[in-house]
Length: 232
Image 1 (cartoon, rainbow, N blue to C red):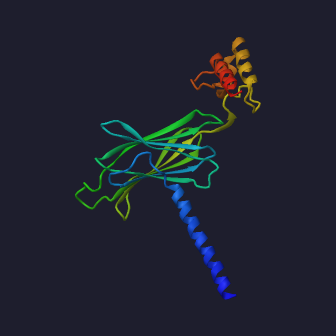
Image 2 (image 1 turned 60 degrees about the vertical axis):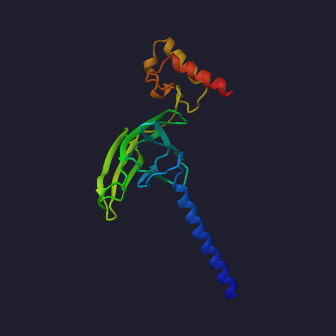
């Protein structure tokens, strides 16, 4: 009996360890290109918002720009924190672009961008710096804004930290739902057309701007009709 109990406990412990390894592995993203230089940089994106969060990390070189990572953190995922490993070879320059949709079911994203350089710690002649970490926490806010938490702060392991909270405005309206009935269909295109014909396009809601050009007008009605025709 004791032997059976011991085996059961051992299996439970093994399963727990395996699960923890798998979960942590999921948070570390796989780059689109091989990282051959010194892996001395890390970007962490933490998402606490009811929207999918797109993360695009681009390395800039003399030969051109390379999108090292193009990932999406699903809003319904249990894994809220993604890690991205970066190289510091030749003092690599990067842009981090974080995108969140303002309206439900919309492909048009609001973007936050940040640029920085990961210096090759192998080329630094002192032991003052051993790596770099940039962390971005994504939350819902009244407007697209940034709050710096930490700027070039070095920890006991000589890793330089930069941290910021990024706020994105969101709304529960459906993009293109011009008549605000929570259903996106051809009636929305008709509603826009009628308002424009009456000279009342100024009465259309912000989310009626389906083509995202900053103006709600007859072009949005056409864009909706074309999209629905293609989807049918």
